[in-house]
Image 1 (cartoon, rainbow over the protein chains, first blue to last red):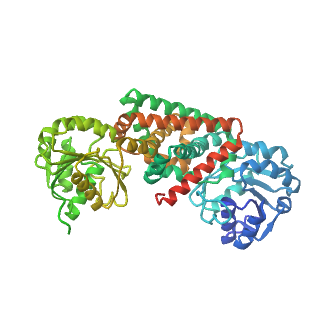
Image 2: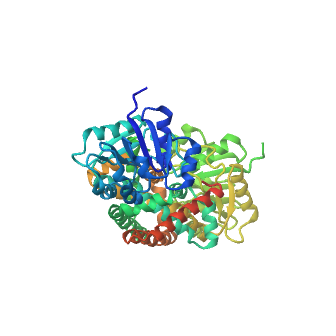
Image 3: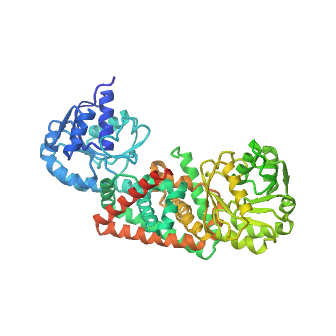
Amino acid sequence: MAEPLFDRLCLIGAGLIGGSIARRAKERGDLAREVVISARTGKTLDRVRELGFADRVEESAAKAVEGADCVILCVPVGAYAAVMAEIAPHLKPGAILSDVGSTKGSVIRDLEPLLPAGVHLVPAHPMAGTEFSGPDSGFATLFENRYVILTPAPGTDAEATAKVREMWARCGSMIECMDATTHDKVVAIVSHLPHLIAFTICGTADDLSEETRESVLKFAASGFRDFTRIAGSDVAMWRDVFLNNRAAVLEMLARFTEDAQAFGRAIRWGEEDFIVDRIQRGRKIRKELIEHKQA
Amino acid sequence: MAEPLFDRLCLIGAGLIGGSIARRAKERGDLAREVVISARTGKTLDRVRELGFADRVEESAAKAVEGADCVILCVPVGAYAAVMAEIAPHLKPGAILSDVGSTKGSVIRDLEPLLPAGVHLVPAHPMAGTEFSGPDSGFATLFENRYVILTPAPGTDAEATAKVREMWARCGSMIECMDATTHDKVVAIVSHLPHLIAFTICGTADDLSEETRESVLKFAASGFRDFTRIAGSDVAMWRDVFLNNRAAVLEMLARFTEDAQAFGRAIRWGEEDFIVDRIQRGRKIRKELIEHKQA
């Protein structure tokens, strides 16, 4: 077995992602000698104790981070500023501070101003998940063969970045580095906009008259079914994602809406060539995705 | 084995749906004593002969329908008017004319005016499919546990409707009857709009600058991946669906666009309650779908 990467790993939050990191850490012992978890509610803390995937459970985030070599925020990104205000004075000099949030510009905005000297910020985004949430939903293999994007600022301690990279590599992930702005644009189109669309179309269907609505539920074809799968995701997490990747999501929504309106206009006026072109482009992207082995 | 429903079943078109009906018919022998197939191109005809799922293959649709008890149009709905003009004079008195198109108002519009006296029109829409197309893509079990919607006009011969119903029941499908207008609205929201969105978002992604686009392909998370799966569908079929369910698709697109814009506005102005409400509605519809055992 590889030597543990950290003496003490602290996770703030024990939902799908935090719970999965903890399970992975406990299962193989190569991430940390000790896993400390803090969660906001007594109910979650009790459940973490019952599930037994932490060595120690703390109500206070400030107390949880004390003496930890690595602290990972695993809460909705909207909670980062408040959590940081609480934990910053208690972070160990030389510690690594990381996270798992789906937005990265907002993370740097909320964490960097309070970062104590000598604490290394290495933001991370594991692109893994299911439509389930909470302490029961995690599993040790969640990150295997999934991308993790790191967005360390230029000048970040190379050793700290290397350790976070190694942690995710041990979880079975593929690691990429990019700047926070590029990250936020990419996830806006590949993940945030599709979720916005999925939530929206469910509401649109829900508003249909009672008779049609019953049929919608009954005949939901594969298209709609795929859309609703991702609409099952965690409420607080997604609220915070939309609010904290505002600019990129609005840009992608605007681009998409223009394109959808153009498609609608082509349908209205029977512009066959335009419609065929759009369908063919969809097939082309699909083919490229398969070639990228992501399909 | 049940007595065959028809002496001669004629399929116009041998793509995913036509090829699947033919395979099912040949496999069990309980749909028809003889399966005749006509296709538009010599290439498809040759392939059907090689694959051997027809008893007879005809280049001429007019010749193919001669003497058939049941004729099923399995071509893109945009081709119905031309096919009908060709076959109408050759339909056997007492024959059943059915189809498998995804739009039903347009089907009645295109077929009914040319319907010979004594021929029974029973439009049908099997809600089954994959993202593949062509004579090689079909399989005998495609329709098992899938809905088939029948939209016979009031006053249609009850025996003819019952025979089409029985044919699909033997294919393992669940059969529902409704009027063509309701059908077209329901499929607009559960299938046509999701496809329009999928084709569109692929194009939106394709238009992003080269660097971001590469990352989009690389990091396509589950949201985008689900969207692109349905974007792999057949070009001519989907072109015709959009053009032939114009009113319902445009209505659903307009409703959806209003809702998406409202979501975007809430993100811009930080309206948390609105965003949370939309996410929760998505989860609610998802839950109802699961309860309807469609998820």
